[in-house]
Amino acid sequence: MSGIKVEGLAKVWGDFRAVGGISFETKPAEFVALLGPSGCGKSTTLRLIAGLETATSGRIVIDGRDVSDLPSAERNLSMVFQSYALFPHLSVSENITFGLSVRRVPKAEQARRLARIVDLLGLGTLLSRRPSQLSGGQQQRVALGRALIAETPVCLLDEPLSNLDAQLRSEMRNEIRSLQRRLGITMVFVTHDQTEAMSMADRVILMRDGLIEQNGAPAELYEQPASVAVARFIGTPPMNVVDLEPGPGGATIAGADGPPLAALGDTPLQLGIRPEHITFADEGFAAVVEGSEYFGADTITACRVGAQRMLVRTPGKPSLSPGAAVKLHWPATAAHLFDRDTGRRRP
Ligand code: ATP
Image (tube, rainbow, N blue to C red; front, side, top):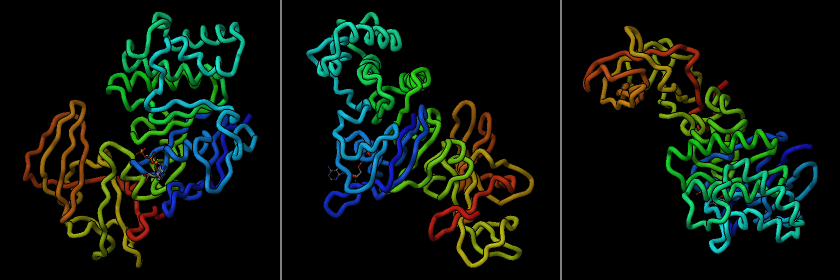
């Protein structure tokens, strides 16, 4: 059994290119997040895989079978929508088995599958209720149940948690992930929330302007961002990215007093440093504290370095007042270099 293979997939509306010819492959039973800012084409990509939109060009292979020209119902996949799309006049159990009824799956088989889903999702006490009598989290579980009862090897989810509050989101993240592992199915999950993608996925595909910016394990995107766009999208708060300029002995942060950082060559560069990799030290870049935000476990301190701003994340309470002169230090291995013109990572 294989997962999903997408080759040169594109979707153009008029002269607008929503998906620009992307290729990627998932492993079987992998949990893949399609991540990116609003409008980057992630939902369109999912809908193309689902067969809810027709591709302008490209190929989609699911489980080794080219499904590019097949209607959605013949692609052997299920889908969970952001809106849940539950039928208001049907009970929970009727909602979950609706697709099986349409496909005339025998009643005994429907009952067997329903019992399994009810057990998996803990819906036992809710079966005769209508969607309007359920909480948001319960509706979400029913929507999930309706997809999973199809027992397809692939399940596609479009922002399924965005209508839930923060606490419930976090519970459902764990629940969906553990369901996916237990069932051994491939899940492709669309989200604009990097925390969600990073915490749930085996692989994150980060999209921007209809193209794939980076495709890799969460730790790869965090540790080796392929571009400034990835660096700025991943991490809370995201990576500091500042302009470098040539100085005596090497490149330095533009307008700031500190040790030379790298040989610049001819190309203008940007330096990326994650806030959690910076410490206040005796040696380093001269900076002035602008202010702090306290989050309980840690504090984010905004500092002015030359004409640029860097955030520093330190454990515990704030210890510096606005206006304090400090020095920022980071290990050489924490520095990322990007080409300022292309935004791409420098080896
Ligand atoms: P969001 O998180 O806001 O849903 P997204 O990354 O999922 O964003 P898509 O929904 O895939 O983005 O849309 C990508 C682009 O394609 C957007 O600019 C959108 O306006 C455009 N688009 C989507 N559907 C259509 C359509 N039917 N006709 C024309 N343009 C469309």
